[in-house]
Length: 152
Image (cartoon, rainbow, N blue to C red; front, side, top):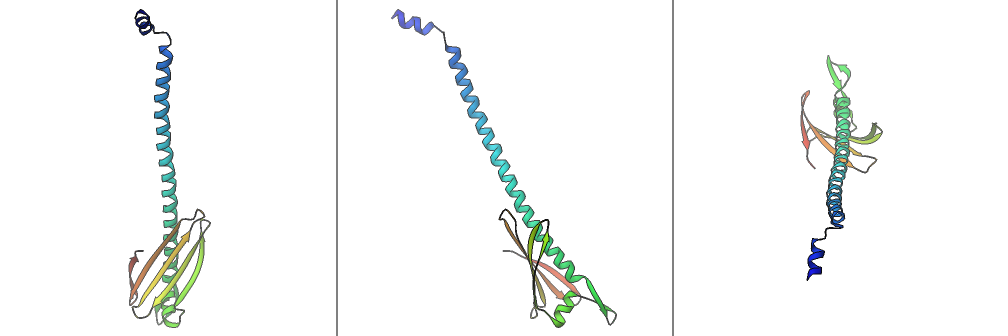
């Protein structure tokens, strides 16, 4: 019995146990913090890539719309643009691509004569494989138009 009591009162080596336990708790905490930060960083990069693809597709729509609305010529003292030309003598469908910031953007323009509507589509697939596609309808009324975004 005296031996057991002596061993319980003997504190030799207990500091090593405390240091090892503190080191273990600190390592678990630090690895969880590193894991959380790395996960958040990867998510932020992915979100940035998606935003880049979206804005590239939006730029494709903007360039296409401004090209369609740019005055080409004057007829009977009235400016005519690409939309007027497409309505009068075609083509009814245009398929093209453009490059912005090193990425290829596929553009298509379609005119629906029944509804008097132009449908502009812009699609980009980034070098990281992220796809973004936007569709804009321009409903014509005389020389005015109304925009309507189509959800996918």
